Amino acid sequence: MMRLLATLALAAAAIAGGCSSADSGKPSADSGGEATAPRRLRIAVIPKGTTHDFWKSVHYGALKAAEELGVEIIWKGTLDETDKQGQIKLVQNFALEGVDGICLAPIDHAALVPAVKFARGQNIPVVVFDSGLNGPENYVSYVATNNRHGGEIAARYLGKLLGGKGNVILLRYQAGSESTEQREAGFLDTLRKEFPEIRILSENQRANSDALEAKKRATALLQQFGDQVDGVFTVCEPNNRGMLAALESLQMAGKVKFVGFDSDPRFVDALREGKMHGIVLQDPVRMGYLAVKTMVQHLRGEQVPKRISTGEYLATPENMDTPEIKRLLFPEKVE
Image 1 (cartoon, helix red, strand yellow):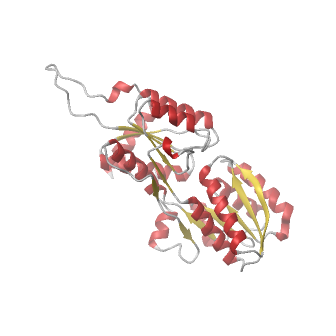
Image 2: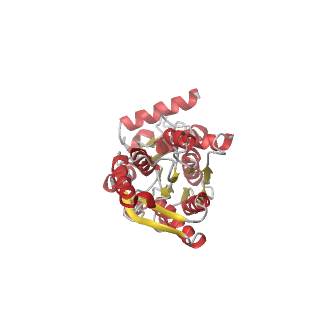
Image 3: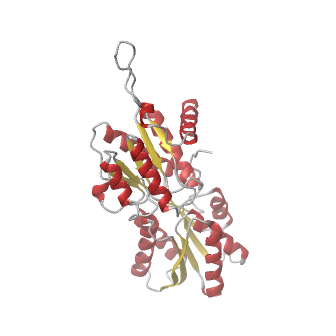
């Protein structure tokens, strides 16, 4: 743990200093002209955002890999998960700086392609994690949850909770986020195929990473359909927050079957209180760890898989206290 704390301090110093010069990590020569020990690999890790608990757990996993493998990571992301241009600039700046590699969770699967191609042109390889990027030729490997399968898990569980009948609402995330689009598609396709007597009341409303906006959208939908709503599915942490707050404010929490995607301490409480009925879980620590490890393996000349799945799980009131699910409900994170 002390070594991990030291690594955290090093990462914080790197962030505070911004993008340092490309020469900072290069080996130097002594008075006799002989090179010192080889410099450590420097890997930029760019999440979609930095404020939500999910990313703090990804950060923890990335630091764990850096510690084990003896490399340096530079963790830097935009505050707003809608800031495509800000993320594009980060990729470009790190490529120009000359880091050894970039691990990227793209905010948009299409908008980030030119920036990744630019990095490739600078001979900087990219590992994509969490959410996909168009064109597999543009990156070394993709490390992520099977998000479509996660959506299928949610549909089957919600369908079971409803006994195969009833009316449901899907609250989508912002367009362009490949991970959540896959969750939405898996949910809708499975619900329509396997539960033909379940009616989808709304599937076209979206909210971004602002939980307050998600609450407004959720409140409008719940007020519009009222007692018709039997179940809801939300596809990410901020949407979960917004929907839960809306259900509580309208005195509908517990009455409507609610399945979310991604964990947070408040959602764990809601699961125990009967206000949420299921949570599809990822393994963010493993995702951050494997993203960095895969990049290091590539840089060291090893063959790496093109697609690496980090797993998907379902937490319910019945299994939430088992060791494996509890670990995923309360993943370690950088505070």
